[in-house]
Length: 489
Image 1 (cartoon, rainbow, N blue to C red):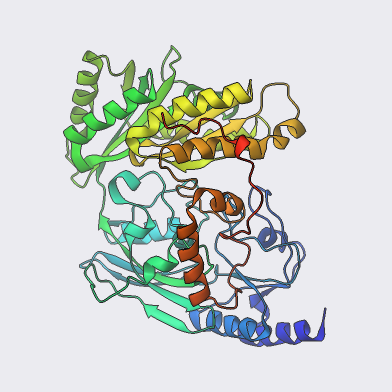
Image 2: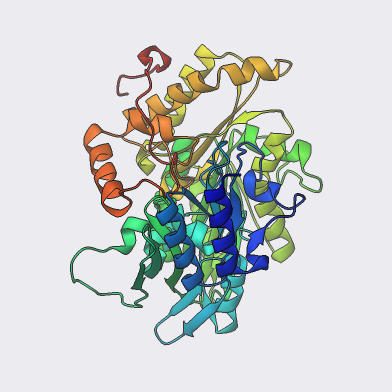
């Protein structure tokens, strides 16, 4: 370690104290690799400030020393956005000690929390005052508010409540030079120029470090009902979505689409899960209605809508959960997909979005081109069809080698993203770009979009020290032959 680095570590310890530096060799790996162990790095040091003031001082010290910073929350991301590079010269700033819930204002339906608050803790704090914070993710027991904001997290309730951009009223941010912007305003109307908070939401720590936020709350949900529906096609799912929105309005809080392959992996590998139907079907939906009234006749609404859809031949079968145990069992089939796919060997995960109306055509075109180019691959297609977000994941053909499949990863990615582009879609619906998609973003965002993004980056982080190597990439050679299905369907 150089004398300059040693002096920086000494200065950092003076700010955060011995408990604020992670030195334990048994603990360090948790900060230097992601939860899937897909990305690994090294760090000069991992720092855990305990307040916004400490974060600001750490940033100022690193800025003066020209040391790159990597902000990190719960480290549950899927694109490597919170992992340092392999140089060992970057400082990881973990926000997990910033866990204060600063204020709850039920009359204003807002809660002010620090970036290290676990999402589930935020949900529980809202529930204690008869309110709902609606963001819900598979990782809600370990992901943090700061990470949710940095990636503009979505989840299963976006259809009704929106993503983190829609749930945020104000932010507190430590800028790249260590200054603190206090934008913690719980206002739903503030038309005084640029909406600065939106620059930092979804920026993955490349423009500044979010340390606190004012978030929206909603009335608590006091009744809900869930159904599992069998369909013949994604087109039938979109048709049923239109029916459900017309009949149930904003009571429709979840509308999750799953292919048979997705569900089959869960049935094969997740203990305790069983098929709600005796017959197999090509596609399934998990539908949830919720209401703030305890006596809302949700089962009757749902059964009526599904009955009419059955009479019209729009669905093949349906079952409505009779109690909380059955509801949990149905959700387990949906939430177990990602874990179950891991048992089938390496998988290639693609988090895309297209207009809801284009989902059936996207699946038809992408499936056809993929199976033509890579016979035998298994397509695990599922997601939040109500908001156009599809997790389009690929497992290797049975019996093929991991190495052969991994060697095809880039070609498969470009094929899928090429089809996504033909439908005016996005290569990242809710996971961000991080390291995983920074190269691809160069090809699937327009030159003007990239120019504007870089202009913002230079303005807010002129020295380029905030989470370098994430979101942006240099121009690699791009092989257009990797994309099939370029013509618009």
